[in-house]
Amino acid sequence: MNRRWMVSLLLIGCAFGAGAWLVQRAIRPQVHTARLSAAEGARLFESVMKRVQKNWVDSISVDEMYRKAAIGVVSELGDPSSSYLPPERLKRLREVTSGSYRGVGLTVDLRDGWIVVIQPRLGSPAEHAGIRAGDRLVEVNGQSMRGWTVEEGRDALRGPLGSKLTLTVQRGGVKIPFALERSDIHVSSVQRAQMLPQSVGYFALSTFSDSTAIEVASVVDSLVKAGARALVFDLRGNPGGLLSQGVAVADLFLGVGKKIVSTRGRTPGTTTDFTSKDPQRWPTLPIVVLVNSGTASAAEIVAGALQDHDRALVIGRSSYGKGSAQQVIALDNGGAIRITNAFWYTPVGRTISRPHHAANADSTLTDSQRPRYKTALGRTVIGGGGIVPDIVSGDSVPPPAERAWVTAVGTRVRPFREALTAVAVQIARQPEVSSPEFTVTPAMRDQLWQKMQAAKLEVSRDVYDRAHDAIDRVIGLEVARQKFGVPGAAQRSATGDPVVAKALELLRGITAPEALMKRLAQQPVKAAPKPVASGPSGSNQQ
Image (cartoon, rainbow, N blue to C red; front, side, top):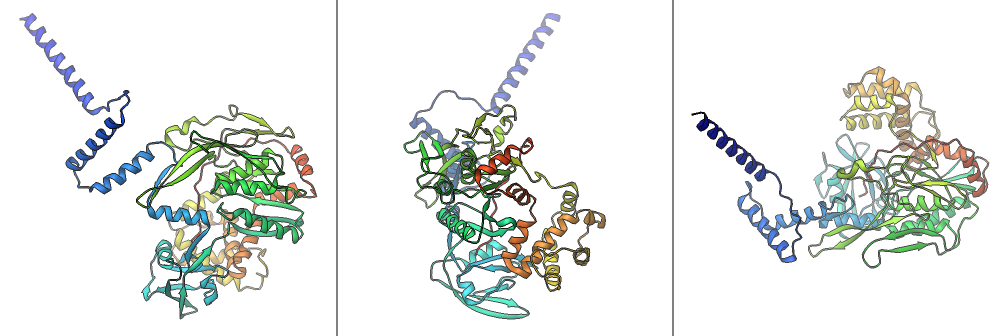
């Protein structure tokens, strides 16, 4: 009896174990180490496609499955810089890299549920027709635009070259119709350029499109003509663009035969050394380059080349760390794939690539592990994760008071911006606003507080008061925009910027690039903390 009982237990145990093994085998993905031939791979793919179409709980068309499969192949590479581009995304990419699109030339934003003109572009159909900043777009081709998103407005205002549309704006309670014809609109890479105190020229570059080097040469020539004896070159938030234009911009500031960047890939033409071909245009001009976590790609090529050759002092926060180059390959369906085909290295041999994919995000090197390189002057520059600035400047995260303020506003950013705009229009009429550098007073801050209360924005007054620096900053910028236009807002933004202020401090009394490098050697050394990677942002151009 006991023996029979033991045999029964043994059989039950074996059955249970076998069942568990079969269940695990069924639910656990099987690892196939054998390589598939091209024919076997094709059969596997077709087999999966047929079974998905037949057995999936929802219906799906064959063309949709193939599209998803194409996206999946590129996605499974684990490379965030490689992607499948459907026709519409490819069109947007071409507009960004060319710096051109076909439309009427308006920069817009949302206010009170309507699309409002921030600025018509110089020479655009909108400017020639007489559309002004502050005009509310109320109808396009007879259709109301109330409640439209900026993207919906953009799609309606863009179209084929020479095509016509009617646009009705509201100005001071009066509706005014305009007949417009779409034309080629060029968006300049240089978004801001101005003279700062101490005869320092400043310009900000937003992207690297196919005319960036020409635009940079023109703006720097203009600043030098206006009396600039030094230059602040702002690459913060610049997501990059065309590698060729990064090379061309760096060439403007380096002597003949200087290495700018090297690319290394496995396909023909991807392993190349790029060197400067022309003499320096402004050899006596001391330069400070500004970078942050939004500085990427071609912008990092420029910053890295000028830093490695001791041609510029780099300040700010560590850059994004995109040390790869991509090729866009057109497909038969009108789309394309953008695929990484090379890695690039700075003149001294640095790779600045930083892992940005979730699968390898933990593999970032610590500061002590990152490789060190020497420039011609013997300065140490760091590889292994972004362009590390020579001098760290600017907050990596907002101060606690500002963070509390942002948290309090929460998702109600739109009503806050509407309240801010309404108050800025009132403040702009006050006599004390005589220049973009006017001082924001407590009374102005109170005006915004009262408008927020009227809009039922529930924010503690204590939180609001403690964030007065951030509040003053946004009030000052919006009032400057309302009273003096985009140039006035740009002037206020630059002069109130702590990183720009640090650049001016470093340039004080400096008249030659060599003197700037000597001043750098006298600065206290600070460790550069790891940045939070940020994506590119764009303006709303119509």
